[in-house]
Image (cartoon, rainbow, N blue to C red; front, top):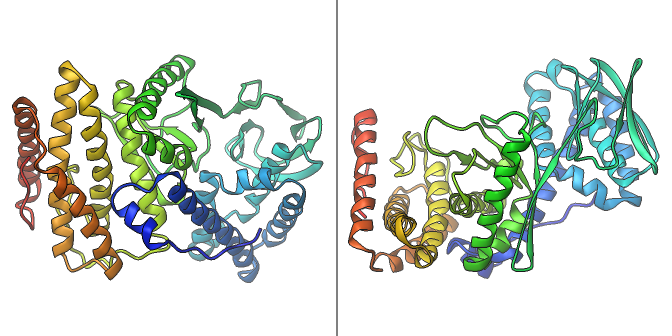
Length: 440
């Protein structure tokens, strides 16, 4: 498990700052996140040993066996070690080893080793601790077994889990549910000769730090598949570069609970590769959401190797897309995401008619102004590093070029009304923003 040094060329940096980059740039960023997982993995084993954690020996054994698997089945090991939820678990456990070592369970690394062995169909028998009646095998699924210790056994012919008198056989098709096993299913869409293949993770406890939904019923799964197919058709037909970025950046989809109104979505730096969202109303909404979240994924990974902001000085700012005041980092993330949203609607508005056409034009008008105002604030904040100033200045030039593009009067009025309504609500809750706002 070798590490490499990462950097970003000037050309890639400029392309990312413009909201673009393409699949090649996102692959570079994904490689950064792979190295981060490997660093966390090494840090976990070393921290458990140096702190004298009672499970340090079992943790080291699981790591050694994982490293041995790497020699014969590198793809299987990478698929598990780089699985988004594993990154979140590694980070959480490392933090626990520092702050609350008694609650840390670094030896749960054995579940990672077991999952890699099952993927590789390698010969392995390893003990894994269980709790709350479950054992989670990252990237594969959930085994229902009694609390205590379970033995995961993997062979070329299959795998099972034994705990006391209980035995669960993991099916060859691991996406299928059988007694004692809930497998991770997939959402796959095809269009224009291209596929978007997402793991649907609705079981792993570390799948996303958000208000996640529970196990998705089959009827809802069919609805998701229909929306994804429509969304993928839109993206491949009209936004091919964004579609290519999404193929690389989004590998896992985690359903979130439906809010009282609208839709919620998100990504998290500790789960790069996962996009979370509540059920979309249709494929167009889902396409826009995927275009939005891939921007967050790109900026999160870039921020791991390029410092764009100085330390938070406590100031909070108005963001036209949020109900709460945001720190500069949050404002930058939002502005970058809405740069992507604006680009999406800028193109999509020419392919929609009727009410969807009005929506597309008004979304373009609203977010070119909202994102434009946010980047102006960031440039004036004094919180950007030298690299951050270059990045945001490039964002501002792109947005400025779009401000004069014509929009139908009805869509312009709708955008203005929504923006002014949002600002009025924000002022009632928080007072006047600390800076001016841009009107659509």
